[in-house]
Image (cartoon, rainbow, N blue to C red):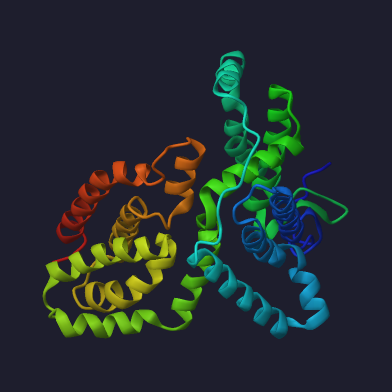
Length: 341
């Protein structure tokens, strides 16, 4: 294999690991969980839980086929209906945990003592392999066929890293990839509907941008705060970033809305704030909101599930004092440092 860095080789060329293949892999794994759920006769909400995950996985598994068969418009309508049904199932509390074959605590403790710190190797491999493939396998191709999808290089590298980690975990524990995927059902069920929040909230952020929500926020600000009240505008921007991130679960989704509605018209254009430090502190304020919301499932709910904490909100409760303190510091720094006068 050679590393090709040639202007004649287009990034639109085919690749072995493409985003479409990754979507198919995700869809297959989700459907595996659906089958396992249907096989669980002791599951209290077996059919509705299976339907929830089937609707979620079908867009990954059948999306391209549906577009080719029915066209984009009908496919988008079908996906929209699926999203509404997913929200309805979650809102009516029709998604729950099932029954699982879990080793006894004694067996788990003995296994932990035997394996020791080797248990951390698969987890550490994921970021390391991702970085290595992202850095070293950019533009790697044979006969104009890339190894990794150049449009989604990091995601393709992450997928390979997860596969490597699965194989290494198989070797270390003596288990099997099928066993690992089966165990993933318990973890996914522990997280519940929150597992799909990142994807849903990313879609919602796009909707807010298209709907020009920032303009609406700008109009609301003028109703309650005088444009010359710099301190209150700073407070509103920082607190708004944190609060909107708590709703969205994602500071990147909150950022364009709050920046377009408050930072740009009032602080940058109105008060001459330096854009770079202003928006950097604004994003940092958004991250404070990330620490305080279950909507940021990847950061707050999943760790609680992986650690088998009895209170799934324990991580959030511990982080709130730090988040509030950092938010106050951000307000002080923004008011003190980003203005040119």
